[in-house]
Image 1 (spheres, chains in turn purple, blue, yellow, cyan):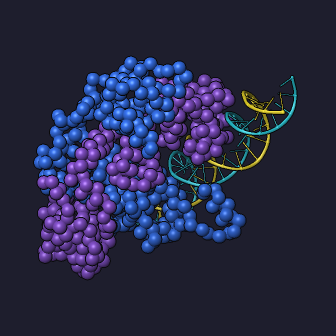
Image 2 (cartoon, chains in turn purple, cyan, blue, brown):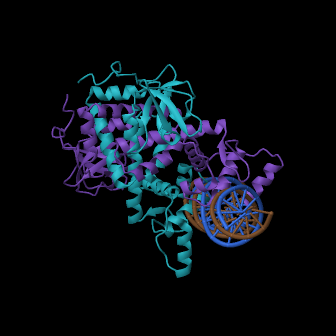
Image 3 (cartoon, helix red, strand yellow):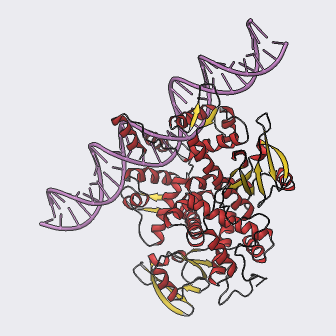
Length: 258
Length: 258
DNA sequence: GGAAAAAGTAAGATGTATCTAACTTGGAGG
DNA sequence: CCTCCAAGTTAGATACATCTTACTTTTTCC
């Protein structure tokens, strides 16, 4: 049994690696949330909050205890150490920023926003956090002040949109519109100069022999790409091409205040 | 969950839908990326791309094969099935949208943007994808067209900002400014009506006996909150309070075009 | 056409997170 | 003060993703 082994090694004073996984961070975050609400974190609380068995909480807290993130006496409540509280605060704060972004700004439903925040909060450094905070705060303020462009931005988000596919997946004879080019420079620039930039209408032609190349017509010019290049050009097909229209986007509501 | 399924399958001897973990989805995504570039996916390719041992790839592909996502003959290359390709396209597309958001819009470095996209792509449904796509496309277009508000938005993101803490963590006698209130309604409204809304200056006073309550002064009025309530009010302390100033934000560069 | 190299696979182990089924402890009521 | 129940804990098992080492098959090249 794993835990037995770890405990045994711990008892003999062996220094063992103490990585705190993102999942273990979730336990810290929950302890933190309980602590700042003035409650004590118990095994049962955490098990309920995280939807796991109590035994699982005990195992997690033991790891946190070994890592000096939490102090815990048998049959007692948990308390974050200074180090643990600092770390838990960071995670909790990131969670709040992200929830705000996804739920209040982007308008996702609560469950989805939480799920997204829950995974993302463990992948952020301080710089990422500050950027997201600046971004959301700016948008929230602009929204509160009734800026027209925010209204447009948020309303455009609700639009039904066709989802694009890589050019390489478009069948021969099909028409579409470029929505994005994900290639890195210098390929990106080359594709743009060939007319393959967002908004361009394309028609995929019969492939030349060899299975390595793609023929297509873009803005009336016939061009040939390698398959690898065609993979980075995203195309919307079908009658509903979303807000992108050939040759301009005049009909899209946009910055009424400008 | 998985356990239940496993048992059910054993008991009824029936193959139900095999669960594909987010990690296994990464393998699909990589196979997809190779396929649309016109290359065949091999064990070695995937092992290199995902940074794992070849044996690990074999195990992953076996699971994908059992789930009918990939067809594979011993010692041969992998091919996504129709079902698998559909799913892999979704994941790949979400990855691209997210990378675009984090790298091109929010300005994160490539590595961070990839890490964030990699975890988030598995937590999105189609609605989330469409919203993010609409959001990024709108911002990208506005940026391309040189809208002033986008410049402001993006420059504000680079600002050094102090990070807030929950009010419950602020020591007695410390001053600060409310930056966000994360409570749900109706508590949110109540806190707002007490003057606790973003921008409000507060001063934490000595706590009343009992350890369950928080005393503070907000805009000159003394108010008392429960600890649970104080946990949802975020405070920036210290001389540098970021772009939030008491009583107005006149000095923040904002929508020059308006 | 055969030997060496490269690619693929198998077997067995580890580490993490989880479960269920016991077992132990602490405290609340009678 | 004792009993009993809820809370906490331990033991043992499973699922999953991963590794290393060794074996097998395919490819390459002389």
